[in-house]
Length: 484
Length: 149
Image 1 (spheres, rainbow over the protein chains, first blue to last red):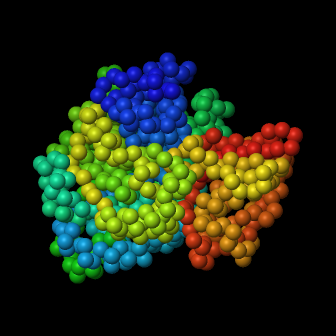
Image 2 (image 1 turned 90 degrees about the vertical axis):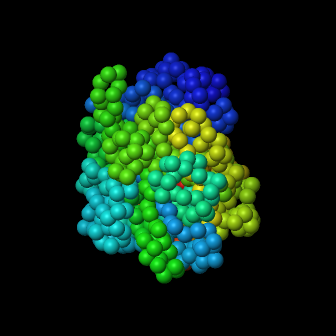
Image 3 (image 1 turned 45 degrees about the vertical axis):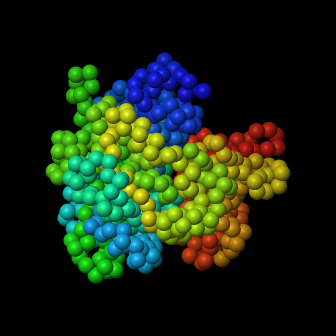
């Protein structure tokens, strides 16, 4: 077992030395408790040590406690790569580019929402497209889609699908730069423009949550976010760039495979780790296209958020202000972003690939909303549909992980195994009995997402806290889940 | 497992946790492609046998590598699902090798998702993770793919 080669070097931190495998440029580091480490599938370690071979990688190839095997990179993988002599790898970002989470709170209490929850869920289920072939809330023509790729959330706000304040509380203000539609293929455009404003399926969801008094874990920071406990109602939206991001990843992986070895003489043992020098023609084209997908994912979550806000206002016959609706933050889980770091005394611009990992900028850092400058950006961690989710901030060791932390629970059971073990309808009944209202387009899809198919989120949060990467602020308990 | 004992597809566990791995064996490369398309439909629909042949669709693809042609073929089916809302199964597939590239001509039939099918999950992409498509002896072909959901 490769796990055996990982040496414990700190609290919830293990290292595989760079002489483990020929070609590794840096060691691989895994943040995990002993139990979480032993629950990781062996492919995680093979993939992570392959990531350590990427040209330009700095310090370590990292894996978070929610890590599990993916394609090329493990999910939960982080690699910071020098843009001057390093590469960009679509496998380090994932197919669902800027899959992420948006989280908002309200001043509603559980007692106020509960009698209307079923009605609200029905309205949202009919207004927010989800599942196989779900078309989007808006239908865009070519020109509008080009604008949306560049403007992200701003495109929505300019058209009345949101307010200016929404932009403040998003990573990159909901609109990342260096997005160039000319780098996006006709196929990706065709696939993307019909899906803008849709939830999708798989592990994507819209979830109403309750924050109880006992779930406030750091009161000072929670209060600064506006989280009061007292059975407060919140909502989490988890989705990404849908088929658009997938098509971009597919297009460029194919391109990178054809040039990686022949043109750039890069030899990597896994085709899903295909890469090209960041400053090459192909590398830049993918970077520009990827940023378009980041913006479309921001827009996607913005449109869904707008519908949820509208439905709540309609049902309660109140304004968003009267309902205390406040967007806490929108975070990305699958991106590569240019960030500045000091490495061995030198200032370097690094392309930080985060695949199933969340940026966790700490207090005082640029790039986070003014309101959060003294506490750090919120980190939103979605649990399974049957378990809690968490809001965190960066911890004292956050810099060691290039300000990256966990993104979810991480799977421990395959979809096929879960489908054999659970029946979707039974699971829905069980969730209802446990106080979680469910709406789904697919009961077998629901079975694949059973809580038991995931690691215990509390173990993941505990490990990342002990490692000093994050500080838990509050825990949110699901009460209503819409699955695609 | 689906198909007879010599030509079949099966979903493989312990390869990927978040996604779905498919292994196929068949006597011809065309059958390998067809079985993979069938497996993809099983991922999408609760009861794939209910899919009607109401709509016809044709496409032609090429790639320098056979395994990547298989990935491209399956991704084309997913592309049509997203863009036209059509779920398709191939009726005839012809694969040739011309001028250094593998070419695949496909005639498909199927129906619109919105025509009352019970859906399962929405596969988003077929990946290159551990992809394999090769002749393993004189009479058998084998493939392996991972579907991202």
